[in-house]
Length: 411
Image 1 (cartoon, rainbow, N blue to C red):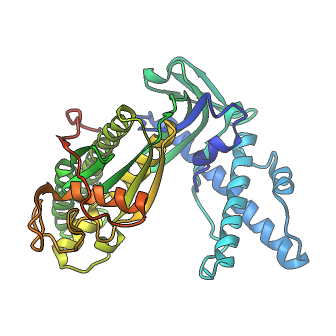
Image 2 (cartoon, one colour; image 1 turned 30 degrees about the horizontal axis):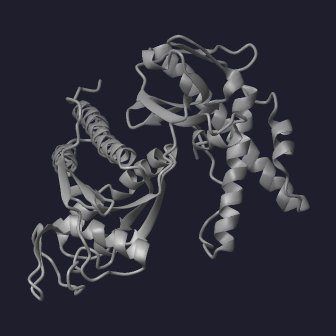
């Protein structure tokens, strides 16, 4: 229930000049800072529980559905947090109610309105509660309350911070900041392109004349390393007693490993998406069609295949591409990719493929990379409404590996 994702909606600035992006990084805090943050989270939970209970008591007794402004006025001065932090909690509550109402209208009757009591709740600081100077970030907690002082990376020294949240993730606190950045130059071209996502080759993109194949083997290797190492930790943890020193040590080691490996996976996905966006800029692409591999992922083809499909971060990669392409004025459209990798570009007949090189047993066509055929098929299907016989494949195909930084240990 993070409000930081919606920070862009309420900004008065011209969206053509600036973008609001969320930056996330772990915090290394002193014991007194951790104590202060926990107390603030308890106060935020107290505010959430108050809003939830008062709202439903009034509705059940009098049939009155209180509005957001009334609840904000009622909560003012009742919690030891910044007034705008309390308002953010009320806004989050009513957003949950509105989202639940829409889902219930659509037939999802198992969804419930907020009712659960909370003991900790994420605190949100808005613009008026944030003081930023250089690498120093001071978060106000209201009148007569101790502020929270943090040190942030140097790259944010001249940035405008619109929204801040401190989020507990596994075994440490993370800082989430909505930062204002200059808008990128929009692409003015009209060229369409298509992407065939894959597990071995993460991205295959083509505009019909050229193609780029970006390897996903590093991503798959990191996913396998995570699964094997977590399994090893779990087998060791299962042999320990709850509350023992050995169990705590193993859990700490497991969380440190997960924090490290997940940041490496995220970095690899950013490298892949950045290279794709740069290719679109270089080729003046205005619209990108991306295949939806739901049919492949939903098939039950054995334990190992199912595990690979469940670990394939195709949805996360698509989200990264969508927001990065949107910044340069490119629209990403999800389309059905059924039959695109197996339909022959020469004769138009479908045959199931097994290798990396496409081979048509009916007309003898071969020599093209299967994923390039798939991306070309997605483009043909999206632009022309179907598969074209005698389709011309890209003459120039480039192969690339994501350019990632050397891994660093996370404390």
